[in-house]
Image (cartoon, rainbow, N blue to C red; front, side):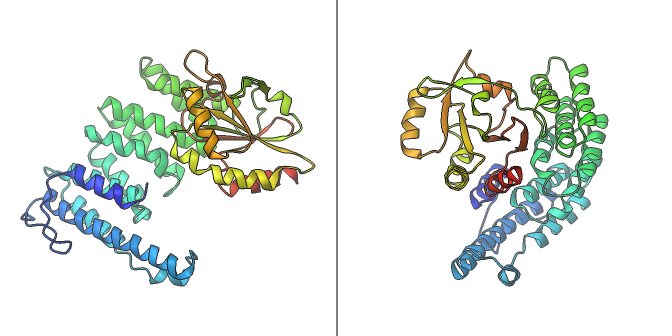
Length: 363
């Protein structure tokens, strides 16, 4: 998601900027926080575009090798502009437009991977000064991805817990608890995560989050590395039965995917490479692709052009894939690496991590 297209989309969403040139920025008087922030957004857009151009040029010169010398030669003004945004956000606390500036500063930093060292502080400013703002829901949801890129899990948990206890906005409160539980779960604080999820169930029984939360509690109890993978039987795209038990003795990558998922499709070259490299060993390797597509004919049509390795499965009962439900799959792609004894050994070992994880099992 780190592309100029996103910058342009966010800029358009901000709305109402009157641009003269990329350096002149705006003809609007900069006498209020929103106008000043708009000008900084335009400057950040240009800096991000320049940064991406410099990276592409460096890659062309070096054949894609971005060594230390090449990296340090790339001019990146984004962090400087982000600091100006921070100063403006601090100066505009309590003023009309101050919340928009603070929220925008957090969003731009996260979306562009710019100056992430200060991302936790940017979120802390939102929690401290704007806990009841209705637009805080979007930054809260971003923490599900941002927490792994900056700060420590304990910092994010403390801020999310504070927000959940102080905000009067119910959507922000439930969202904060939901993301807080995910951060705790990902960092290994499983008992704390279950406690957080149960806070949602007990206080918001009718919330749309409750089914997801129950699924995450099920994951904690059944689907983590070191646990025995749930047994299943499903069907190949040709209607033949295939089960996890029938693959015992093989290392199995269970790949939940769909043809409409760009990230899933982008992993197929890695799957082909891994399949060619890892098959035929004394401890065989197999890929079971569980498609969550809606229609079998459309799936078969796409598969004819994808050259996708492994066993292709498709099965729908009551409008859903039963194996996908059994493995609590909400996002795609979702991978489970299962060893030859049927034990889950890794979750989502995308890209080059797949081969190294299989090698670790074979040691």
